[in-house]
Image (cartoon, rainbow, N blue to C red):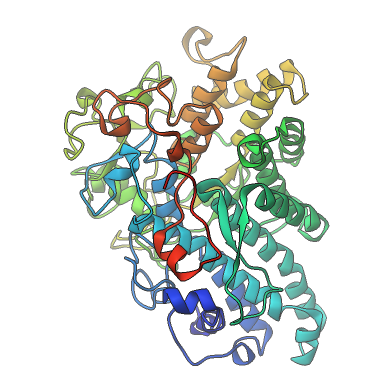
Length: 527
């Protein structure tokens, strides 16, 4: 990132809550110098996008966006989001004893958790820099700086992208914490402490933002890879509406189906070879990706983006199977998840990207040799060419936020839940996913072809198709399975055979540090 982007942080850190929490680094740049030229705006726009992939302005460490937290493990977006969405479920366990990391799979975290402090701070930081960009990208500000013509038009168009990214970060807050510190570009800097917004109101706000920017976003598949367009907004709406009963108390399945179909009809296609979607040259799969966070081993170096996936899941096989220069011996999955695949070797359903299948039983969470290894994200190119970081410290794997197959699954589930559509279309969409999964066929004896389906079929298919992409916790909550005794997996609730836990763990607590800094915030029930 260009050094000029640090000026954005300088403006952001002026806010009262930022000063109290000491979350932002100090520097002497100002908006007047940062936004003096069109190139300055481009650099800041890159920073707004980059907040999902990077943690600061000096590679993997140094000049951190968020002070006081570990830059590699606690302040990154992708790594933090994964810990919140996957570790509390059957899809992931971790061997490490780093501070409170095991509390996630044990479903016993508290408001003092440092990883949750980072996960609360990261979206709010991203929202804050988005607000600053929007304040500085008005017609009046552009005119006052002599930016006009095509350059001004490009900046005006980018406002819709930034509003989407802000809405996406607010969706993360809504999903994880059920409420959020609430700030927009209309809030004066450095005056009152930010207000709080509850889940239902936040749902309404995000929805209104996504609908408002629809006409201003680029048509689907017309913008450069890695930037957002209309289809990204539709995909987020589909995901939100699918979970609307959790978020707002009222189901919106018909709306979810409608927006999923809008994405499906936009020209995206499933790419052959499931494993290629998660390799170092997965930008070649962009016809399936509706929005992906670009990760590059040279340009977006971080220990908290997809670099984390490749290293943390690897052991002695780091070089040969994961394409990185060393394993971190950390994350793997449980036998309960692996058992969702009829053939865990991947010989038939090729999405079963597993190893260590002879040691599936976990008697000791801290023993990386126990449990099923996941080889989903690998820093190897499908064309056999070297990755950008020849030292293989940092990965080139882009993180898919929205893929076409998710929209197929949303349509099918919403059909079953009374959202309209028709069964033949839903079945067609499900079988498209399974046709790719079984190697552009349905496997021996058509074993992969579905002739009927129910809600359990959808949940299991979502697990097989979308695992380790940040969906499982939200899915299990929607089905009433995350905290209940209805579905158990190894070490759920800290018990080897699994146990139900308090329903308060369906949502994360607001970090105690934030509550102390801002009396406008309130805690979630039970914490």
